[in-house]
Image (tube, rainbow, N blue to C red; front, side):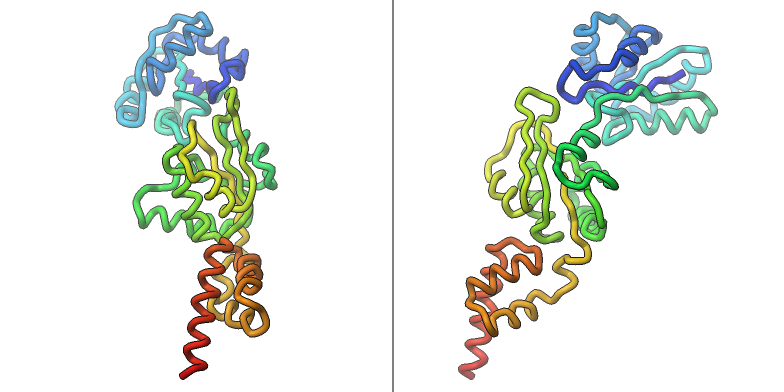
Length: 277
């Protein structure tokens, strides 16, 4: 049997009794990083052979693991933190077991996705999890489009030095919708920041420390794509000042107030120029 064992995402106290029993009983442990897993095993007082199995060698290791399972070995696999196969190696091992009609099971435990869904303060069910936003322009834009058209909570992982950029991209595509950034989940300095995307962008002007989860609640029916921003602003400016029109447009179009104010100035200048001509 192959056991995919969830491990703590920060707080070592979140290891389960079943996970400890499984690691003690297995013949060997395959892991994403042997150094990190060695620290966990030492903390638990367990000594087992450790073998690396990460993104770059998972397919090769799966052949070795399948052979060991056929010999009757009991093996465990752990990623660095959380559930193997969820934005971590492990999915290829599970698929190899399926393809070879060999049993595998999951030993559940801590999950950053589930923790963030509940802790975000946004409606947690249903939700969609998208892992990390791609760095490449085209797939990144395509995923942002998918998120913009998802009518429920969306969760993303993000590294600290890309959090602000991702928040800005989400705001540009989704408008100024409700969101949360959850940092260092389960750890001593766990922090939750809630608000509109524009507010979170300002909060993260400086790079945070620690891994983050971004939770965002798209509003497809009220997205800025449903209304022509220029036409909306032109109508508002017929009866409102630039300042008041910008405030109303920010609420109507779900865009940051600064962006709405810039649009108001632009449309007012165009209208004045046309009047003079």
